[in-house]
Image (cartoon, rainbow, N blue to C red; front, top):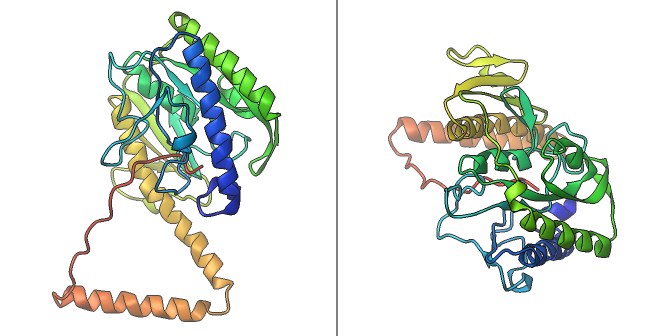
Length: 307
């Protein structure tokens, strides 16, 4: 799992794997008749630069970049711009049993109209608003099972999950050949693909799985909360998406409890907690005395998968 996070030595090799996978799909799409391919890097390793090795990416494709961070799931979804979407290096949903299984970030189960969904399905429903189909996907065997209902989808299995932290890789040469052939077929069969839509209004739910937690919402007036799950009704996909993303901001505060547990195992834990308490008191006094200055808000980061 260390290979998925920027700053670890193993990450550098995974960047090469990712770039090679993307290049195989680009090659297949052009072979199938695509005249233009744009690439969005949405793998959230923590690297401020793209996870894809841009200099090694197929030069026929263009990496989408903007001056400001943008939401890779929703910001590009416009009618008449793109014909289809292909997703590469995807993973199972939270609780789906796959390698690095998660949805959006760790511990979050997205449920739309009573369906627990994965990130590929989030992308499919988002682009469905523009009547654009997802035509290709790659990932492990668990995700393959979850996407069988998309019977037009060209899927390439790149590994067999042995658990959330381990997988058996299929040889790269075989995978890349399969990717080229499947992407080619996907482009050639575009007219047989389907854009997917959710019935409106949408029953939207976020279920938190440890270390995420939503129990701080229990008893809050106006919030429909039960058993680590919050439920609301949204008039369209964007409002469902934005609402779940907002509740994720609450659920991730549960990570702090795990941080406290980790700190508590260290010899200097008492010192850290004492310094924290002193800083809290000092900040409180500054605020109440009118001496505290509001810090500049951090730059808003585009939400991406955590791995």
